[in-house]
Each structure stands twice: as structure tokens, then as C-alpha cells.
Length: 143
DNA sequence: TAGGCCATCTGGTCCT
DNA sequence: AGGACCAGATGGCCTA
Image (tube, rainbow, N blue to C red; front, side, top):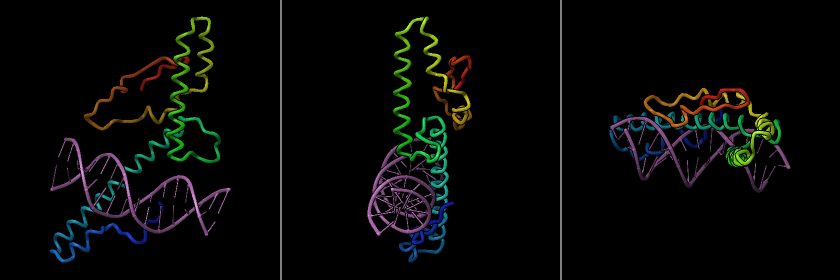
């Protein structure tokens, strides 16, 4: 884990204002701030996990250096556009060209998006894509 | 050493 | 009231 800012602590900046108030209020505010910081840390970690999943799915220039968050989003956008184009073009082709389409998807393997498949939505929430499924190179894919 | 990227803290806003 | 989300600020690490 990275070191924290030296000038800031989990106690929060509201301490100075609350110093003059009752110790109970100060304690409560401190506890709330620490809890909020912990939640924010956890939230950002979740976001980073999602970015890691996206990096596994998106094409990379090289394996030596991982894409930054910005680059990952840009690459994902380009990748989706490219796949969309492939599908659009495929619709214009008839059966004799089916092999061509299979070739386009040759590099798309289930293990590449395993992290997305295992995603559990929060309880009580339904997602449209949760019942989505399709056939890809003989693989039945459920998402 | 400057610049890019990132983690963390923080306060504000919105939602449940 | 409390949690989720967001954006700004700040400081650390790394690389050219």
C-alpha cells in the first residue's frame, strides 16, 4: 500500500473547528471521517479492480507496461468501435463469408473476460446484461 | 529535475 | 442520518 500524505491524517480537517466544541462531538466527527475515508479507499480499490479487468480484455501495445486509466478507457472505446464495425460489416456478408467472421473472433477467448463473468451485482439490483448470452466460436457465452 | 500517474484525504451533493 | 459518488488538493513514486 502506498504511504499516506504526511500533512493529512484520518482524523480530518474539521478537527480544528470542533476543538472548541464538546469532546463527544469531536469524537463522533472523527469516527465518521475515518469511516468515510475507509469507504472511499474501498470504493477506489473496487474501481481499480474494474480497471484491471478492463485491461485484461482490451488489447495492449506491449506486456511490459500496463495502460494508464485514461489509456485504458481510450483503448476500450476504440476496441468497442472496432468490434462494432466488424459486426456491422459481418451483417453485409452471407454464408460463404462466415469463415471470415470466425477468423475475426479467433482471438476472443472466454478466459479473456472471465473477470467480467464472475461479477456479482449488489443484492436487489437487476442488470440488463445479466441474462445476455450468445454463441461465439462454439462457446456458449453467458454474461 | 520536471512531468505523468496514482493513492489518499476531504468537503460537497445527492440519494435512500 | 448515513452512505455513495464526485472533484479538487496534495504528496509520493517513477521515468525520461
